[in-house]
Length: 450
Image (tube, rainbow, N blue to C red; front, side):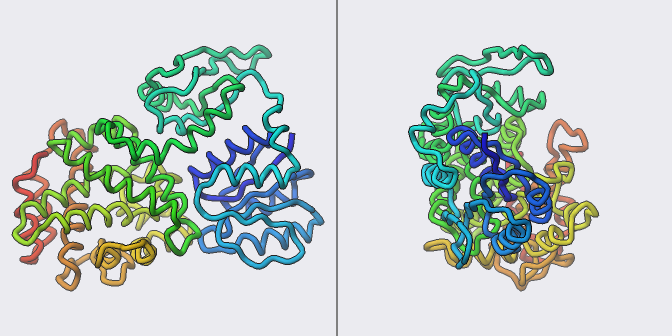
């Protein structure tokens, strides 16, 4: 069996690429999110058949340092680089575009490793094949029988069937994630079908107009995670990112209109074990839409513009919240000692970075980049304001109020309150936002259904 090292901090893509490498070309994969750690491993590892990497990680050039290390260690191994193509001499590098194209990735990996399509089909594999459990979240029904490994450490491993083909899977996924299970198993003869369906299901699910609000929430979160995972190392929106994000924003709008109270959305998101960033995006969009439906100058165009900005405004923070799950809000990120200097810099500049990249979105809503840049109250998109002034966009003010409302809801939830107290939330916000323009926005929230 061949061995590959995958150098990337894109969590979702790491799962998908490593899954396809094992399923199709019989390659075990070691994932390294940090470039320096990956280079140390390459030097120490006696045998490597392939290196897969993103072209950059946190703005750092991966290709140049990787090739330099391979040459110095006299290791001759092909490289698949995901991202913008650069000029490389004296090395075998396969460049692939920075959006998920599984078929092209598998074909390229096979070429690099000398594995033909016939060899992929004829590959001998164990009876059961592992699939990361979170990748099943894009399914409502199972494409095949699903098994759970119930014994470890013995020579005879026991697999228990937990779902039949076409069975409902969502509750099982939630249950086993809570139990700390990382993989489900399928019969190996089903593995290629499952891998293909997982890879293709994200956009297809977002296109399904018959989904319930809960199903939309799961489908959109998967799409959000894929877009977030592709942000690192990209200076502009790719075709894939544009396609998925458009469908996500449309689904969020539909989902919000179907749910009467904000607490119903929060419960649904928490039941689905959704991430902090995703919960904040959906709830903030809900609050902003209520404001714009109840303030004299608000319009549907404004509401759709803020739906777009909420999807992207904190997307650069997604990997950090994933890495530090005990950190529960953005304010804690700003002051956490756990973060590296690079991570702290990303937190300080995430609004500016998000504002810059949405400028490359085809037909980006006018002014959306400025709203995103200003969503922490600073005109330059760096840091977070202490005194919220009037020198920012009115829609940025709506966004700021919406986020602060959601933050106070979370605080009440964490304190053990079974019901949300709207008066308490508004009292805190009126004390925090003293300028007239902000108070006019707050006035509209006196009628929101919590």
